[in-house]
Image (cartoon, rainbow, N blue to C red):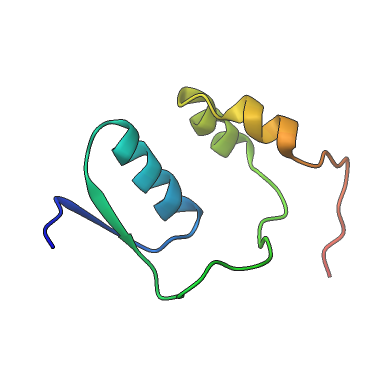
Length: 76
């Protein structure tokens, strides 16, 4: 199998990169060490800069609408 781009790691960065490449018409292959997705979410917050980047590709509003809004959080 030949592909112009190999994305290694299906975490948030790899998934977004692969999706953006495909959206722009670039074929890519995404691989990950895990055989199946996690059944939990490791993220607790979305940083402001991440939302700015998501806004440039039209995703920020969808993430904000789907997310759970919190005014504070305790992490132990």
